[in-house]
Amino acid sequence: MIDQIKHVNVVDYCVIAGYLLMLTGTGLYVTKFNKNADDYFKGGGKIPWWISGLSTFVAGFSAFMFVGAAGYTYRKGIGSAVLFTSAFWGYGMGYFLYAVRWKRARLSSPMEFLTRRFSQGTTYYYTLLSIVPAVMGLGLGIYILCIFVATAMGIMDLSVTIGFLTLSGLELSMVVTGIVLLIYTSAGGLWAVMITDVMQFFIILIVTLLISPLAFFALGGSGGFFHAFARIAHETPPGYLSFADVLRNPLFYLAYLFSTFIGYNAAWHIGQRYYSVPTERDARKISVLCALLMLTVPLFWLAPTMAARVLFPDMARLWPQLSEPSEASFVTLALSLLPNGLIGLTISAILAATMTHTDTALNYLASILVRDVYMKLRKTFSHSVPGERRQLFVARVTTFTLGFLAIATAIIVQRTKGVFDFALLYYSWFGPSMMTPVMLGFLYTKTPSWSASAAATVSLAVVLACNTVIDVRPYQYEVNIFGGILVSAAVFFLSAFWPEKNPASRARIEAFAADLRTPVTGTSSVWDRNALHSYLVVGVLTVIIGCALLALTIVPAGIEVRTLTLVMGIATMALGGGMLLYFRSQLAKGTENG
Image 1 (spheres, rainbow, N blue to C red):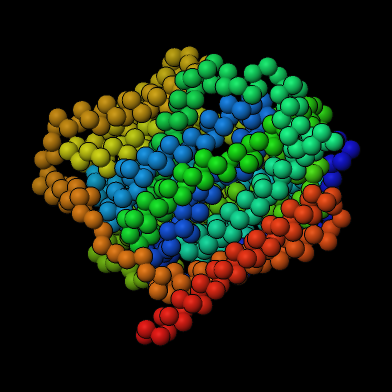
Image 2: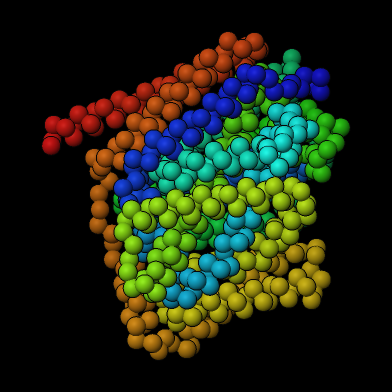
């Protein structure tokens, strides 16, 4: 199999370039969907539930699933499925508890929740703690992504001088990726993020559905598809097909499960998706769709990496330049099993996985800075509220600035090294401590306005002490997760013994609690201009992807590859055609009615 690993050629470059142009063009086209800041940050509350659901699903992971998750599966075996499908339970909690509450909170930005439930000072405090690590996360995501993209494209050793700045091939890939991301996110807002996320979901799904059966066909050889399972059973280490690792490390797996409860219910981008759809029922539909996808789709990119354990037993020989060669297992499968053109599609899928994570973060971070900081400060100091056009302009400038900082962070990380490990530790300190009061604040409204800040501060201090004063290195992740949750929750509930005394704060919290008890009235009628035209945009993009797949069937390849590509191309075109027919029928119906 080693001799069959291919290199990227001109066909792949054309596919990748076409994909980036589609993203850019979509973002520029969708600018007309935004008439005000409400459209830019929450789609006017009219985004169809299935678009928001698919966007939520793909925003929940990045290139990590093709890289880190693949490497973990390659090393640990089937136990990894417990980790990487655990979001099913997180979204299940969302269905029963949080989807409706996010919608009833009646927000225009995610952190507005903190202002309504706690105080404006809490919002400022959380913003101060959130923005820097979030921008670092964006930059690190771009950095991790481009390591593999640049390696697969063979441009790691390239050197390009632009003015006074000399960039390596890796850095150039980060700049190009970041610029495309900036254009479509800053131009199109949440509509562009969600519509491009749907397109990227289809690309990710196509690639995973291609590689998964091909990996088992290759492993089975003349013995057939099912012979591959016998080879995995006999040629992998003892316990590889059991849940022995789960039993050896139960605290780690339990901590990971608790982190998914937090990440898939309290994360700002999750809340943004729930309140951007028309009705409470639509919000719950998002939870159901994401839960089902998280239970099934990850298996299609985890299973082939188990086959890679047998096909490529010595990954270090293939990727000596990587600190953890097993993380290249999925990319190695693509380079060995797919023809050129489909390799470019795979690289596009890995780009898509990180871009969906990054564009989501850019949009909600910008909404926090504009709605929760800029607007409040402007009103406080100038006693005026900027107009809608001014808000929209500031929103786009803010998004562009954050994206630029993310690109700069990616380049700094690449040149200084060592920041990645620190950032991971930094996030494990902050996430559980800060987000536990958010989850509890929806469920219990009897604590005072300062309870979230107090809970986060005490919990952060305890977690930091455990990481510096006490030696917890073997269980650092578990200590950070459980310690952050338990201490934060304890302080939050203890604060209820000191009821809110400020009349204005008490009235605000009571009004918020009343909203949580009051259903949101709305309809899911598709006859909203932007909602209806989203079917047109997604339909056209899907047809284009299907045409590209059919065109790639002319590239020389094995019969299995060409057959699968042909079937998926036809299916993708049919799906896109169905959306276009639906758009036309609804447009005609709307014209007749009005």
